[in-house]
Length: 148
Length: 212
Image (cartoon, rainbow over all chains, first blue to last red; front, side, top):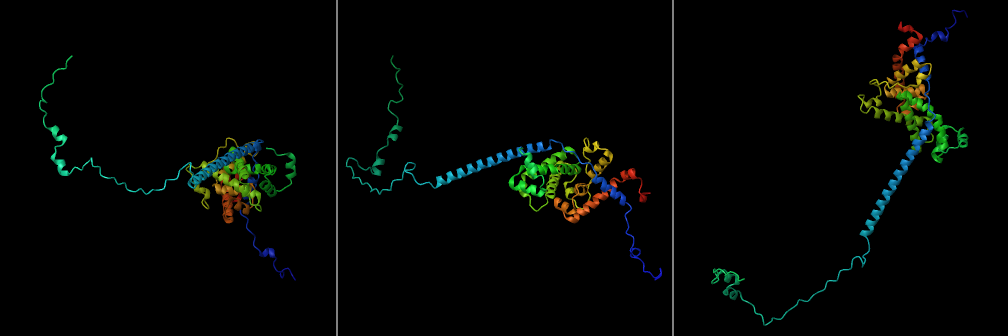
């Protein structure tokens, strides 16, 4: 097989893959980002962190305590309320009401010393108020001065 | 804290998940201390790169560990500990942002923006930046400034991927986002960073052939 008869190599058949012109710039940027200096962390970092944790713990403790107190008060109040509504009747606190008694109607015999004034008789006699309305004889005479 | 050294030594060989299980079931403060020691640096680093302020990053790192202590019962055993911790950290950082920018002109909805890059966020106070203490001061500062110009969801994703080294799947789990969205955010964040830092690259390596 001569050189002309030989089939073209695979490399020659495949086109060259284009590389972007800014390939190096892209590479530099990524390297520069990667190589940015690490920021230092102060030695007190952990100490300050634990301080904050303790403060948070205390806050959580207070919150839990307040919640428990409120829950206790609510439960206690509710319990007392329920007990009051459903308590058994006590003779000391509230004595039972007396049973209703049937009272016989009272009949009184007519007393003979008294008499019933009929409406006609009542009008025949002038009333004391009518008598007072008439002038009193000698009523307009001035009274003598008081003696010493 | 009454964690004995012997106890710490005895537990030091255990992996994160096992330490978390010990802390969860036995209330082992030694296990918790070891987890804090393992993650305090990467966590502070992530939060600093995300928030852009060193003091805030330290405070939020402590807040993250505090939540880990308080909500240890929410850890699901087969879950990878680091992913779970970064979930807490991202939530802490997002809450911080929301509180900080409540009265800002920037809309909070941009935290949830999927495709729109949204407005550029303010560059944080750089009065104290740890980067100033290393030789590559200038480059590190420029990169941090560029990061802070990214919308928070993009920044979060690219920091977790490129700086913290999390996989796409872990980022999706930690940020409670779809895998496709994570990939998209990372790609767009890289493109945006490249645009923002192009002049720095040229300064360092000269003009690229396509720019001439």
